[in-house]
Length: 528
Ligand SMILES: Nc1ncnc2c1ncn2[C@@H]1O[C@H](COP(=O)(O)OP(=O)(O)OP(=O)(O)O)[C@@H](O)[C@H]1O
Image 1 (cartoon, rainbow, N blue to C red):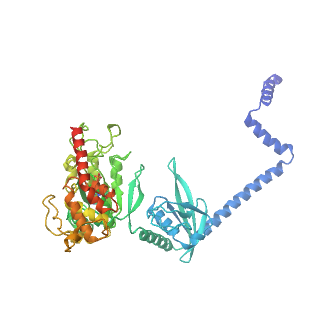
Image 2 (image 1 turned 45 degrees about the horizontal axis):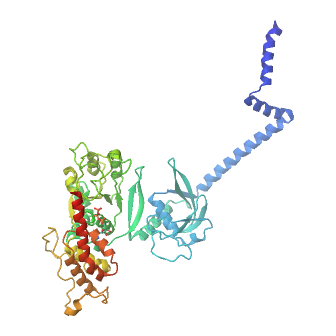
Image 3 (image 1 turned 180 degrees about the horizontal axis):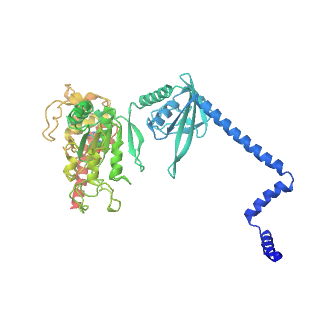
């Protein structure tokens, strides 16, 4: 009986041996390796000793690192963070950095138009994008800073599923954290110094984070030609607002100010905002209401994330909505509101922003204090009254087609941009303009010089830089351009055709006006 019961087991074992599974085979191979050689003890010892040595090595490394870290302060700066840009610009200006052995080349501006190290032999010019050196990925360089030894390394870490971002790691041989503050402060000051003549422009990405997209040279306010009084009105209002935080706090009024610039396309709405940003030393944060993925919550978050003093810019506030913006209209209006612009997104990609979402974002509890909001539109009348009301849009300024005064001034500034004779202060002479309702009539003569009759003739052989001639030329140009018929952008476009040739610009103005008039008439006929 017993032999019978043993037999099946023997059979099973035999069949297993005949077809060993891969797992069993591996195990049996290792076991046989130890046993077959007859040195299983030695193998085991080797294995254990190796393991202990590795463990010891790791422990020692850990102790060493902990000890060393006692003497180092480590700072990690991530790309897209302002401090990363400060540090990169600071680094690019360190003289001993040039001696580093491992460098990579970069043409990014870090928000300051690249005034970093020039590539040897490159002529110093004012170009925005200049190539400069930076620490290369996964290698490090060292330098001395205020008597402290610094090691700098750059690495890349994943930023979402598809992208990577740089991390700049700075190790300072020091125990006092003050040195880090000092370094950041120095780097920020270098960056600010370089950026003094620039306005930084930020935009939000699909992750709803503010990112620096570019920095532009400041545009002098004098280069914007408006009817007298408008620039001063906006500038003074903004300055007064920025200086009256206490006044607002004491009265419990939210410390925010909204400006609605509306009117003809190409009349200078965007230009003046950029100019004001430079004048007030503020950065511009563009809020694009038609951005993919922007919904009410994201908009609220974005506005709450604005820095305390900045210009938030919503361009073409009407265009974000396919239909006119009002709380009563449920469906998009089929008929487009007249305007030179294309409508906003089509019904397929209608943004997820509702008017109430926009209103809440502008003055809800989460709305940032201290910011200046500038909104522009070509279709003022289509905006909901709730959006236009004081508290949201405190100052409404209309931008009209060019007056004769503007045409003359544009001419003068176009051909003599450095002439500052007619800056803000002297442009305000107090009287109001009949046409616009907010400006003073243009001066008869900008320079009070009595010239002999023959000298007044504008001839090609006369010097173009001659201010008197330009004044006379601008007067002539003013006469030739009809009042409130062309946008400033159109006039600028015309003058661009006669760059450096003011005489031609005057000579051809009449024909151009006729031609443009005919084109307009044709467009009107075609649309009727
Ligand atoms: N008042 C102005 N003074 C000087 N230049 C002007 C003026 N208006 C427009 N321009 C010039 O015309 C161009 C377009 O101006 P800008 O973008 O500021 O107009 P806009 O009113 O914002 O137009 P849109 O409503 O189409 O956005 C710019 O290059 C600018 O230099």
